[in-house]
Amino acid sequence: MSISSLRLLSNVIAQAVDTFEGAYARAGVEFPLLDEAYDPADPSEVLRSDPAVEAASMNLVAAAAQITAVARQPVVTALVSGHAFQNLVGLHAKEIAAPSRADPGLIARILRLLASHHIFLEVSPDVFANNKISSTLDKGKPSAVLFEKPEDRLNGTTGSAALLEFLGDECFKSASQLGDALLDPEGEQNPMTRAFQLKEPMFNWFTRPENRSRSNRFDLAMHGTAASEPIELIHKGYDWSQWAAGSVVVDVGGGLGTTSMEVARKYPGLKIVNQDLAPTIENAKAHWMQHFPAHVEKKMVELQVHDFFQPQPVKNADIFMLRHVIHDWSDEKAIVILRHLRDAAKPTTQIVVVENVVPLASPAGASQDSSVSHIPGAVVPQSPPAPLLSNRGVAMAMLYYYDITIHNLIGGSNRTLQALIKVFKKSGWELVRIHRCPGPEGKCHIVGVPI
Image 1 (cartoon, rainbow, N blue to C red):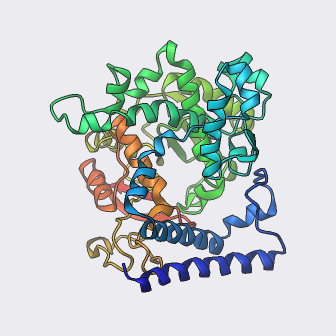
Image 2 (cartoon, one colour; image 1 turned 45 degrees about the vertical axis):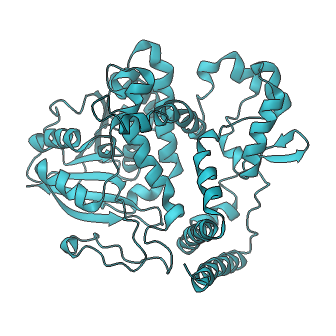
Image 3 (tube, helix red, strand yellow; image 1 turned 180 degrees about the horizontal axis):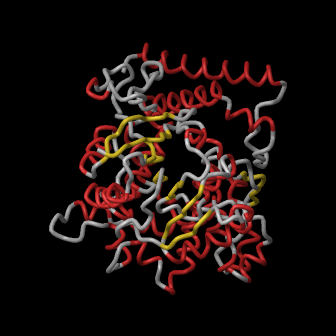
């Protein structure tokens, strides 16, 4: 990369800063400070969701990461990346030492590592305070309560802390086995099976009584992923209003039913069938009674125990919705899931898969696949400025981290558009439209109809 390319990257950063300053000046609010606690209702935080601000943020993050990768010594970059697995979550060193009986010196060192990545703030030697990033993980309970009843520590939280615990436990332990599995083609190929000596898939393992706390944590973590997306995003793609009152929406593998609940709030005439395994459905019953009891009392929601690898029991569905389900499974297993839905579908049934369509990491401006141009929404409408990668590089890295994570856990895969078309076709569905939700994260509502 030439010096002129470095200048282009710096220009992208400068243009993004100009966009930030202009948007916040027009709104009459200050840009949020990193050293303050996070408040999602703060007008300065709400403004981050403005489409222009979101796009500028993605460009800035991508350009900053790319210019760092170019400017820093390659060996240093490789070593920093190689140590990424050590990013743990801690609390104030003096507070955590007594109840956990941990070494306060080691806790301080861990917190200092996090503070170096702008997670926590070291206000004086070995004294740490929350900042905007670390405060998003606050469970909102005194530490004494957390240690007194650890099994209840996550109840009533947003799910962010549960998600991070899940990443630090099942996900990171499984990731440690990826290299061994990759280099042992004749051996066990699933890293989580290797890490935990499993004899069954992760979701079945979660149903065991001794893993109830893991199952609860996973449910809350998945609720947290829904909470991390603007809840109205489910209305910013697929047109739910096309369906008359009484139409049946089956939320396949829906967890607590967070997404279908949001659909039902706006369209209360829709009948919801939320399906998942037994322990999750038990949690879902309490979740619906707490957050949308009216739909339960009107018998407009059925919380149904169902394994989606078995034949689909609902034969009158107008919509089968699968949010973050298909990417959990290999092509072979995803086809089984979708084939069961196809076998139960009416001629007018539609399938709505809520997932990301994985973009390629080619340079910005590279030609797109013309073979899919006939599918509405298939072609990405706008590429980032050169010399950024077309997928915005590090700014979209979470999507690719998640791809490898679901491979490690259950052999799943985030898919490119061509891969999705292939899976749909082999299971009896035609991919007919992609609704690209607003925002740079790439969330899509992928619509299929029976072949």
